[in-house]
Image 1 (cartoon, each protein chain N blue to C red):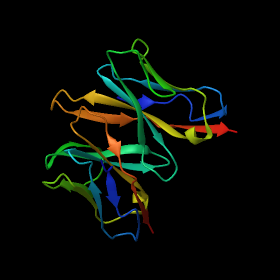
Image 2 (tube, each protein chain N blue to C red):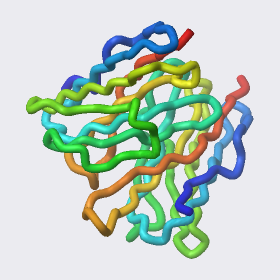
Image 3 (cartoon, rainbow over the protein chains, first blue to last red):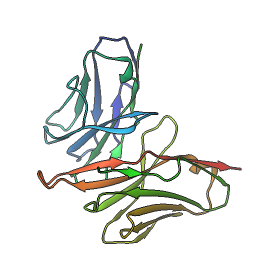
Length: 112
Length: 116
């Protein structure tokens, strides 16, 4: 079974731009979560989607948004990029909220 | 507040020795704990998990111990190999009583260096 895939793997943007990241979960997994990972803050939870509904949200500004499609694929969007948004964005999927999460390789976003 | 933390940010061990990575948690309602390994340039990889009704679980070369009395979790790696060099995260699944869902909180991570 294929693992979680994320595209693109690397991205360079400038301040003020917006970006959309994509995540394809493991087949059969209906829950997708997004995390931001930085050296200073570690793994910070962004949000979780299950069956196209956002079920849980972390403490990030409204510039960070996401959605999930009927095939469980998910996208996250960051608008009006700031330098501090430079990070590794990780997507994780699981069958249900109670189950183990499996992570993708991440998208490395650099904001200049 | 709720938190999952690690006692040591870095651990250096000799190849062949056993490694012990520790983690403290603060939420008594947590019922599920996971250890992840993250190598440079990759996403976290599941290693082993344990539910709160257990105090020990073994995998291949790894053992997780859970002490609910002191809210402590540890990962033991037997015969540590150079390929074990990575950052190890503990994670805690907390039941959200309002929604019935769960949220996962990750610790800060411990970097394991294996000396050949």
